[in-house]
Image 1: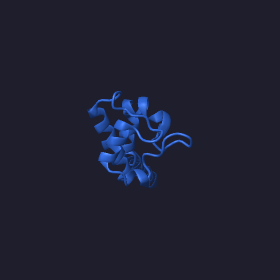
Image 2: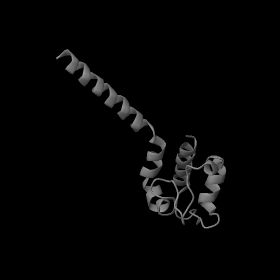
Image 3: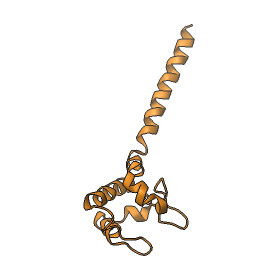
Image 4: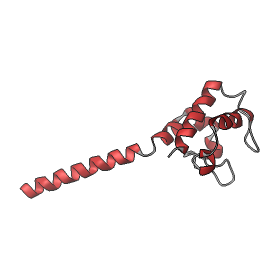
Amino acid sequence: MKAYRSTIAFFIFFLSVATMALSAQPAASANLTANPIFQKNCAKCHGKTAEGRHFGGPSLISDKTSATSGDDLRNIITNGKGRMPKYASKLTSEEIATLVEQIRSLSKK
């Protein structure tokens, strides 16, 4: 009976540690990908998980994105670049600032 309790205690401990580890990993990604502005305007090209699409927009969690400054990201979203359309008339400056902050937090991982 004592061994049975020890086994149950071990599994409960293991499950709680595993749950904490899994929930802590993509917090920033969850913020971006859960953002309705991202889902409506960005996910169709950058993918629902922001990892990019083969013939669409690039990954927002790549090394290239992490090397891009917040000002450059803001400029790209606002004015467009290449195949990226401009969103100056579609999004508020606050919405753009939130997207930039969420993208930057993704690339810091």
